[in-house]
Image 1 (cartoon, rainbow, N blue to C red):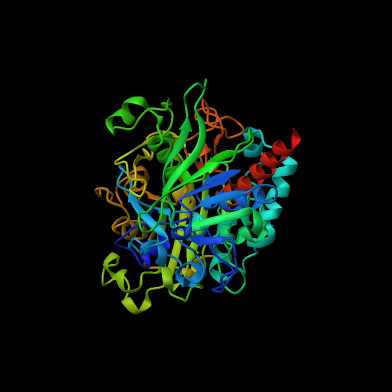
Image 2: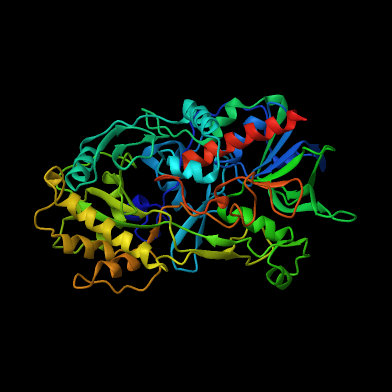
Length: 547
């Protein structure tokens, strides 16, 4: 979502919503000898591979490439380690609410009026999200044209370090049983696999409640082959153009925290490449800043055109998320996403609960005084996320500063099929709330229309409010739309990159991250983005040694 739904009711009923993934094993930082502040970098350096973005895809990618090549990873943020707002499940949402320049998250508001956030930390979104770990469907893998065996091996490589089975408490169990009573069948038990029905998924939080992020996958790296620079903001990619049929990526310009300029170049060699893994906002943004994008738009920002590519920044999607907050008469365990209902109509039902998410000091504004006394504020969210989605938008530059957010429009519910899926999802949540297994976690005197109205009156987004209980659920969906942070697109396969993630019309440049997706994989994408980093790292190394 925009800032985290739990944060929404917990720390930010006045801020927004969230839903990303991950963080580190404990508060103790691993002894990564290859991680440095960019201020220590030489003015000019040379590598076999230069990767921009140390996030959910970038970390497993460089850990793999470093086994047989020299690799530079440039991350604009800092380290996640030692920051309890990232590492501890009980502090979930705190990083998303941090609006400082040093925050691991950078808030943005889409042109749709939905509050959102992007990662600015080593480990990327896995440092900010709710931690749910679940694989893509077999259909997604087939449609992507991926090698099924290597996909499974890559998932397992990730899972060995960062995925766990969550301990299921009473509230999550009630949601699970409510889903089954609501007809989201069968029950598939605990599994990472994407299967129709209700299941318990994985989590990147361990049994002690510590987050394990994509940054932990750097434990696999070859220390002598990898250099990671933190607080390194890449301003543009450098291209060789003269005398060539196609522009060839040859280096990058980046600045450190003091503003000093550095250049990193590819070593000579036909297999050496620059790889952008800066996420669904950062990757199309960097291509445009480097002169690859819609010609007229680049001209309006006085950016020299390297290659006209009108599809850069197009196809931006964000899975709409809508929630219902259910106050509970009894204590609710603190839990993030653990159970999911994978429906056949195109909606995923998930839940998070606990007093941390019931509102705290900022929540009473959403409740009328007669509804519930402040001391009794407990409960949780049941949310639905629209699969896909079908609706798409676009991204444009605001400025030439890579540290500024671009302008992005997602066009939530522009396609009526997305809206219908939301309506069916909310109807399923009603069945869960009214189910026998969930009965002890709801007040009898708070009817379903009252619950909807309470949630609708909360400051979930910046959109004008229209909903009242006499209106159809379509209005509720539009009025209460949030993000679950699963936005994607902008550098899509077949439009901006080919099936090997090579940028069309350019040599020695790839994009490997969620910006290449046309739909979000599985119920939650982080597992597949981490897998993709490993998967492509293996494929690239195979190509490297083949000839």
